[in-house]
Length: 208
Image 1 (tube, helix red, strand yellow):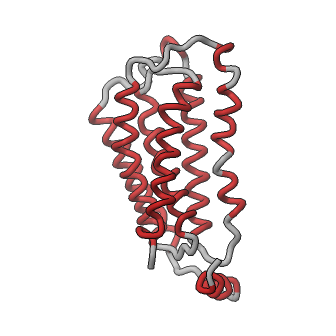
Image 2 (cartoon, helix red, strand yellow):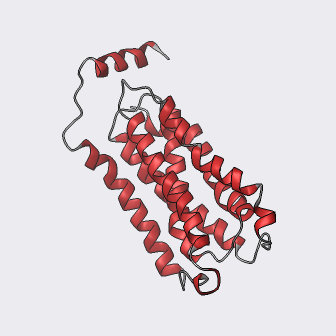
């Protein structure tokens, strides 16, 4: 940690008070970006939940369980990182939990059911993730800029995870594909890629 980081942390620990309405300023661009992503899939795609009649709600619940958990965890981590004077290691560690669960379910997946891979809609899935992830990432960056993040790479990483999680949450109802391998390759890898982009660009996008 640099001397500047240490000074900021000490000032925050010694009694810096968050500005009134900081939570609203932080959340507003993130909620707005998520709404844009939802509107995009509603207008661009047809027949959400089309596989419920044949597959039930289990596939969508698995996808949403992962994406919504990651969305909430990354949003919380970004809020935590954006307020100096706090240890951020624990918040970052929790971001690994959804991915660990996917990895654990990936191992027995071939025994549970045979799913075609990569399926028929993988290109549409990647396109949706590629279009919407940067939109939600931009919203998270704007939200983080309303705070005072010191560890800019960590903040960018959390913002990238948030962007990918929003994209997956918005697209999942329109995705007919099943299986943990599909989820790991066409959802988790794009999300991790977005997080890596956030890690690299965070210092430039979030510097004061």
